[in-house]
Length: 105
Image 1 (spheres, one colour):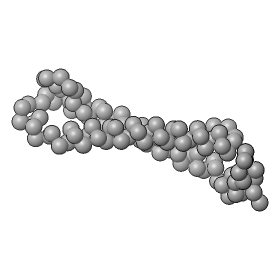
Image 2 (cartoon, rainbow, N blue to C red):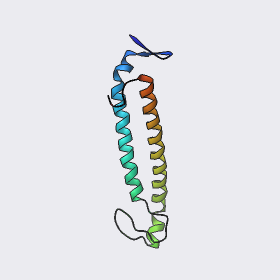
Image 3 (cartoon, one colour):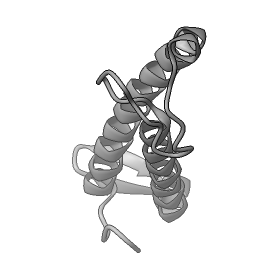
Image 4 (cartoon, one colour):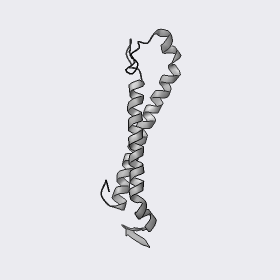
């Protein structure tokens, strides 16, 4: 059986499984958000004498240069996580609008 949604027809299994899809998308957004907070906390500040917010250790000249690749990877991961959260949030609300229903049920 097909349900009429706007101008298109949606299969029955899509409409019935949509609460599970919403839950999975919200779970992925939650995991990505927590990961983003942790990644931002681990990064060093842009200033001169910086102290890591997690370990509390002051960085020296040698440890700064040794971790250059790590800092670049953390910055890229920050951007990727932020983009993923934005896209997943937009997808969540678009799918909720298309398939109807409340946001949480």
